[in-house]
Structure formats: C-alpha cells, structure tokens
Image 1: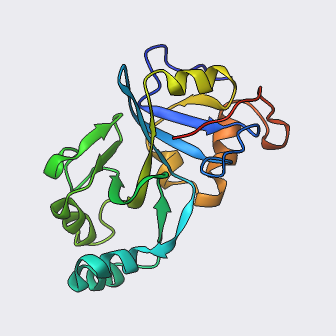
Image 2: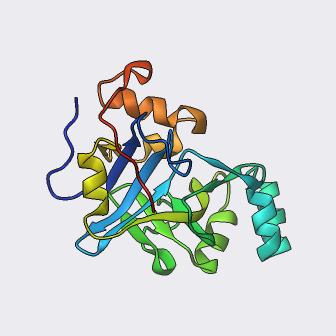
Length: 200
C-alpha cells in the first residue's frame, strides 16, 4: 500500500472511502491543489456535470465553441469540481505547447497545471492539432484549517500520492476512482476504511 507524502496532502489525491456518504463526495477522487495552515483546496476529477464543453464555451464566445468543435473537444463533459462557487470555471491541463505558468496558471506537481483565465482557455481550445489535454471544472472543494486532516484521520479519505497526470488524463472518467483504489493496493469491492464524513 502506498504511503502519502509526509509533508501535506498537496499535490496529491484524496480517494473517498465507502464510508463517506456526503453526496458531494461519495465515490469521488479529489485532486488536492493546495494544503497549508489556512486550509485546503481540491477538485473532484471523476464527476461529470450536466453541461458539455461546447455549452460552456458558447456562453463565453461562439468562436471558441466552433474551435472546440473543429478539434473534437466540444462534446466532452464539464466536471463538477466541488460544491463551492459552482459558477466558477477552472481549467486543469497537462502543460505542453501551453506553458505550465501561462496566464496566471499554477503548477500542481510536475505534470499538471491549474488556471482560470480567459487567455488560458483560448490558448488551450485553439491549440493546433490535438493540443494539450485539459479539463473544465465548475466549482471546487474547500476545507477550513485542520478540517481535511480530521477527515483523513476519521477514515473518510485515503491519501494517494500524485503520480504524473495519468490518472486524470489517461484513465476514463468512470474508472478513475477504481483505478485510484487499486493504486492504493486495495480492491474497490473490499475497500473498507473507518467511518467519518466530509463537508466543504
């Protein structure tokens, strides 16, 4: 079984234990972007929302929607990143043609970056060819100081170290939680960790 990095939970993942029944997080895989004395910030990366990339882009700029359709990205779902500020759009991407720190983006580990600017969105959508892979997320998960530590200690979450970007971009949405559980050395059907709940 992998052990979490000793110095904080970010960058890394939190794998929801079956005992976690909060509807915002049950069965979720959360990418932890920040974890410090003031709290923590994360994004659910395995829950499709009710809208597509095309629908979100159409509300921003019709030209962007057409660009997404032209490069085959328009039909992808926008993910529900969490229950906090569900109207706020975030962009998670694997840097390549677009730099990791482009337009205010911040690195999450060595292979992922996170941003939210219009310029970053345009650069990713309009990238030639396949471009850099990206996900659009609405909302985020937030924890007050020591809250996430208490939830981990109660068995609501199991930390998993961040291993590149494969779990986010190379594993299908519906298989990400199962894959994360197996990376912990467990089987999804027999994954039983102590009780506890979570909120954001």
